[in-house]
Length: 491
Picture: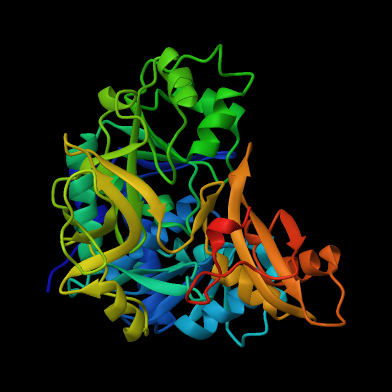
C-alpha cells in the first residue's frame, strides 16, 4: 500500500511553476493551482457524489486542463478513469459502458448530440458544470488514500483482435515505472516543455510524455486538435524541447508552409512511434536540425519500452532501438524457445510496467500474460548489435494515422450486413494516413454487392478511421491449408 500524489508534491516544491497550459484560448495552471483543483474535485466526487475508490468514471472529452486535473484526482482517490474515444460510433460507446459499468459519464458539451444518442442508462456529468462546483474554498484540502500497486488508474480500451474491444488495466504501479523508464531514456528534467497533440483516449496521450512530465514537475502544453502550422509556431514560441508524434504528423508538419521559416533550435528531439518512419522524412527533419528518436510501445505494457537513440536514426533505419532501463524482453519461436540473432520470433516483455490484465476478462489476461511475460503478438528480430526490428504483426493489426485498427472488429460488422457471406480486411498503403483498410467480401447466393450499403453500415457502427477506404467483392476468399483466410494473398 502506498500513496502516489504527484501534484501535491510539486505544489510543495515549485508551487508557482506552470504545470499545464492551453493555447486556444490561452489558459494555464501552476502546480499549486492544479493541486487545489484536484483536491476540490476529489472532495466533491467522494463526499458529495459518493464516488468510491475503484469506481469508474468514463470521460468523453478532448484533452484539456480539466482532464489533467481529473488524472491528478485519481492519484488522490483511487477512482478509475475510463477515457473513451469520441470518434467511436454510438454502438461502440454503448458497448464500453456495458463492459466497464462506470458510475458517471463525464462529457464535454460539444459531444451532446453523441451523448443523447446513447442507449445506455447512465448519469451524465457535463465537464464544465462539474468544474463550476469547485469554487468553494473549503474543498481545497483532501487527504490522499492508500492505493494497492495494481489498482487501476485508467482502463484503456484497445481494439479487439477477437472483434470486441478489451479494457487494458493501467495501474498506478505502471504509471510509476513507465515514468522512470521514460525519464531515464529521454533525460526528462523539470525545465522541459512539451506540446501534446495526442488524444486522451490513447495511452500515448497520457503515458508517452504527459504523465512522465507531470512526475518530473515539467510543463505540458495541450493542443486538443493537431494543426501542423500552429504547432510549428508554438514550438518556436514556447521553445519546446521534446515532442511526441506519429509518422503522419511529422509528414504533415514537413509539408506545412511554416516548416521552412520556423526555428526549432530548442528542440532536443522528436519521439516517434506507431510505425517506422521513412528515411526521407528522417532526412527532412535532420536537415532542419531536429533529431528523431523512434521507439516501440503498446497500451498493455509501458508504453515506453524501446528507444532508438537519435544518433542511430539513419544508420539503423527501421529499428525500434533497444529496451529501456527496466524492461526485460525475449524473442521466442512458436514453441516458446528463444531464437538466435537475426531470427524472427514473437516479442515478449516482462517488468513492473506490465498490465495486471484486462478488465473482467480473465481468459484474455491468461492468454496474453504467461509466467509474467506479456506476449505482444508482434514478430521481431534482433541484429548482431542488439538492435530490434518489428518484422510483422502477428495479430493482423494495421495503423491508420496513428490509430491501431484490428480487422476482426471490421469483419464482424461487415458480416452483419444482409447478404454478406465472408469478409476479410487488410491494411493497404496510403500517402496521407500511412495505411487504410481494404475490405474483401463474398456474397451469399442470390445477393448482390453494394459498396455504398457496406460503407454506410460500417459508418453507422464503427469509428470513421476504422471504415475501409476500399471495398472489393470476390467469388471466394483465398484460404490456406487449414481453411483459414490467407491474408497474404489479398491485395
